[in-house]
Image 1 (cartoon, rainbow, N blue to C red):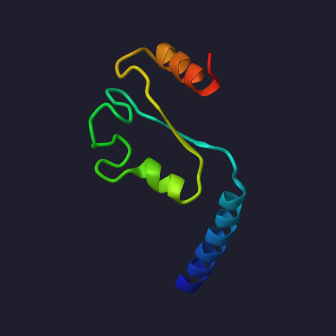
Image 2: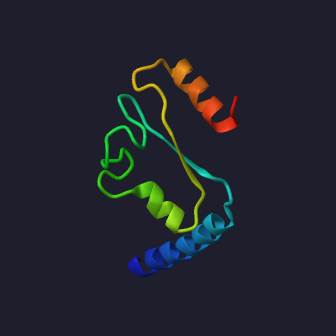
Amino acid sequence: MNRIINIFLLLSFQIFGFVYAQNKHPIILVHGFMGWGREEMGSYRYWGGKFDLEQYLIDEGYTVFTASVGPVSSNWDRAVELYYQIKGG
């Protein structure tokens, strides 16, 4: 039984890796409630703490953007801010 599960996992990881390799969409990191933007807490990052997750993903070849929206704004306001940061305007 374990052998079957291992084979299944191996095949699924290979298939998912192929799908991820074809993905050309950018990654947009958006903080949650009471979060902060990339440069708002000095060298401590919301995404990764002391480890810079955004830079790591960029180094791995991904297109990554970090958005900063109001930490205590309504969902509507946060969505509007994010939309204009992505689309411009």
